[in-house]
Image (cartoon, rainbow, N blue to C red; front, side, top):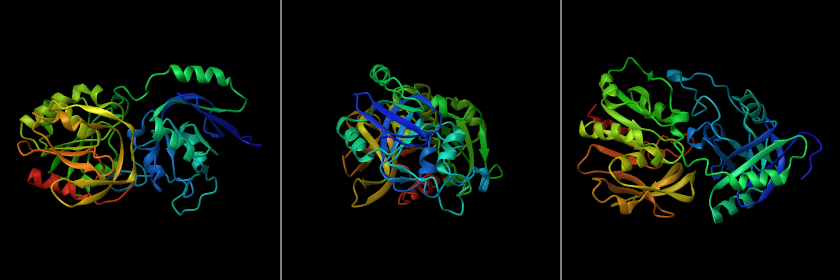
Length: 375
């Protein structure tokens, strides 16, 4: 595909498949894991979600950027209302069409301007249906995204792509976790520690909107340090990468459980709770990344529509002896979507009850957490 004006781009998958399109953002060759998400709205929230760290996010919805990009202005409690972190966290973006003339009253810049400002590569003009079908059939895979002005050495890029390892099979939490402790809604006397593995702002909003003080602490903070804040509960956040590589957090979780401090895990927090109790996880072929994943609450006839972004899940067969029981399952593939315990003050879900973006069916779980804390 040839464009008269502007940059060009090539996406090379590890299996040698090549897609050509229009390029945006800085020129160069970038590496990441090619994944897809099926949400129809919420590209600013999705792209600033730390769980997409080191991933090329493919949007299946055909038009991206049509309502522009807002400013990172502080909202209530100093949290930007339109984003899930302070910067784009995806390694790159792939879309069928990128809108360069948005229309929305909150828009302060175009999608391409945002990419340029933050130095994030992107491409458009490709058949994202074809790419999504390939990832569904063969699974998510390492890829190279090249944005260029002059034709690059394609064979060299193909060769390098075939040789790279899985970009997300590592402890990526250390890259996105807060570098220093932050406190939100400091005047409240009801404190909750948020163990930050790459926490979305939506989780913090959901807590402070319920009158809680939120202590956002780095993921590897020891429990005796967290105790100094006299928390009423511990929330383990979402995050990127392989949960099995984040081993330093398990002692903190187990110390909290031993101290009978209520624990709530979200997304990676669900996996880390399971791992801390001796269970195991495995990687899904192409993950769950959407705003429309149906989840069934076991023992009931309830089905919730949930927002999800994860590539790993808990292995149900490994739960024996962990004091944890299956709570929710995915209606599509029956994978584990939540855990609870009759012996421990702990529960967790694989989906995102804070949505951002997405449905609010399971927002009540934050109220359940407050009830468990007795405040």
